[in-house]
Image (cartoon, rainbow, N blue to C red; front, side):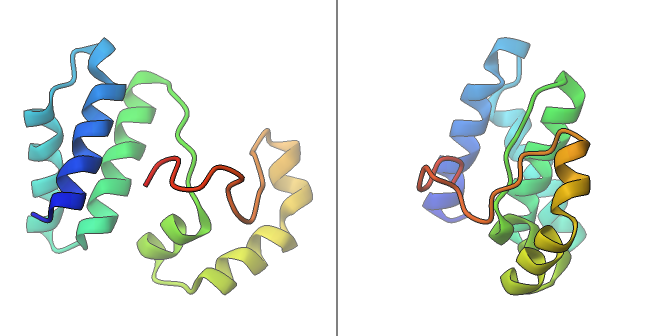
Length: 106
């Protein structure tokens, strides 16, 4: 595991510590994803999504995050966002092509 990945897992564990989530649990979920064959980046994103869903929290994903999971290019993701922006906003989604806060969740 890369140091950068471990740091991300530590940050996730810290955000969800109020629910009793530990770094060991985060690492276990992450490792399961990697062992299943998904990329390290996708495993981190999947962990964030799983914890957010389980604890009814909000996580924000960049176009780069979505592209890493879907296999599409960032440009394709941005195009889909633009094409569906009105519908996404009507559903309560936050739609920004790029985050105004660099490295907020990276």
